[in-house]
Length: 81
Image (cartoon, rainbow, N blue to C red; front, side, top):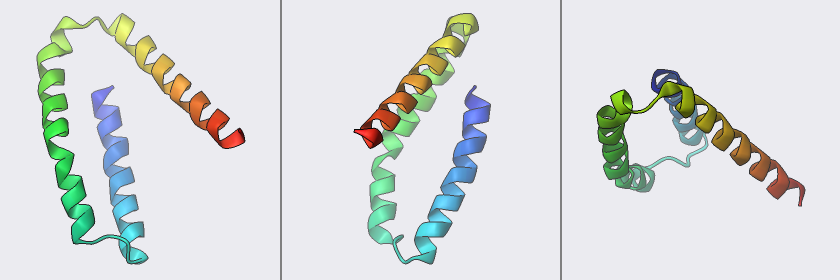
């Protein structure tokens, strides 16, 4: 799952930064705010590295799909209401 997500995020980030830069909405403040996310990113990477072998993939994949589906439903309902 991690490799697939990484590929999507890399493509999405490059496209987002390109679009923001094209319309003049990407500058020093955005770089600074993005830098504030680095501690959480490093922590998440560290946790994933230390828990990968301990978690059963049979349970993780369905859990990820349920959380993703729930988030999608929440966004749809928020936009409709």
